[in-house]
Image (cartoon, rainbow, N blue to C red; front, side, top):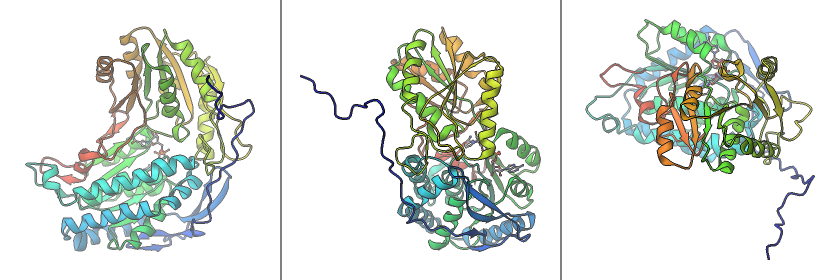
Length: 493
Ligand code: NAD
């Protein structure tokens, strides 16, 4: 006779807190700019504070680079390129990149805690996804450093020179790895600007880069706000520019670089459809929907932020989805039980709440589930928006938070048209029992990455990037490496 599982959740059952310790973390009170292998203050002496979004308390003060500092960083990168990095044997360069991969893996626990403190993401995610993947990117690209001719048969790959790179706040160390690893393996030197709300893991990476003995100037890290990024984009001595961030800023960058001859790649926003056909395994689909939109509080460019569900299964699916959302634990990012951490900043929380109000004003129904959010810190409960039309702003625009819109469809063509009908084209998902329907739907989606019966799976070997307003160029895999090389066929994007 079946016995009741001792693990069955009784009403009111609670996890005990399981906080990750922070006593192994070493953080300075203040950080300078990492230029030519050393930390130096900004020429203006200006600094800003980086805040822990879960507690609203400052963690460290960080130098704010102006255009003079950006000049210094680009000059250091140029010197390192001309005198050391471009002259080094590729196999030796590869060893440095391997060393970075290994050192990140060795210090993974500390990086994970700092990432969660500075950005608000659950420690489970920074520990199991962000930091291991960052190390994996360096590891993957290190292997190509001395095999570029094999990577691009028939071409004569050459490094480009100095790369300027600007990254967002949603995967701070991972985005730095996506940018730095292929650039270094291809033989370029770099000036990287992290996002202003999450500079700390990039600065810890600068310490690590100095520790592994990378020659000074090969990697320079300049912290600051949008103005610092704009000064880097405008710098006349760049041979390549790579940006990940919002479509609005991507447009500005495109205007600045148009006609300069500098190759560029833009990884921008998204509004992915996660499509559930009527033959899908509903419980698995529910897990995939939850992972698709609530992973990293929905601060994910490729988040499955629009659920499209066959009308035939909409009712049971939504019932199971609401029940599942109600089990999600929202709270302290450093608690190992936490499913949904803090929203990255006060400004982002205001933006998400504004969109929820817009949805309400558009006549949609707003439902919020999950556990009660903590009273202090920036939190937003997991939110479903139903009763929406395709033209509604909450369906068309990127919210970048834990907010899922829900639409139904009756035919394959209706699903395809709704899925493709936004300005974006970064990612998508399809849930079905039939391989043939997977191929039919994934082939019909105008999106750079499409997952089938899973979502938000990443691998360094796999190219990633978008169509339409989601950007141009690809990162990851050989495509990502090629973007940092002159293949003799027109370089970069
Ligand atoms: P954002 O565009 O506001 O900022 C991104 C970076 O650009 C930051 O470092 C910022 O300081 C800098 N910046 C701001 N103004 C600038 C300017 N005029 N010139 C140069 N740099 C400037 O974006 P965000 O809010 O930090 O990030 C969220 C956005 O990033 C979302 O739209 C998300 O979809 C997108 N994103 C895309 C991908 C992808 O691979 N496609 C990955 C992650 C995030």
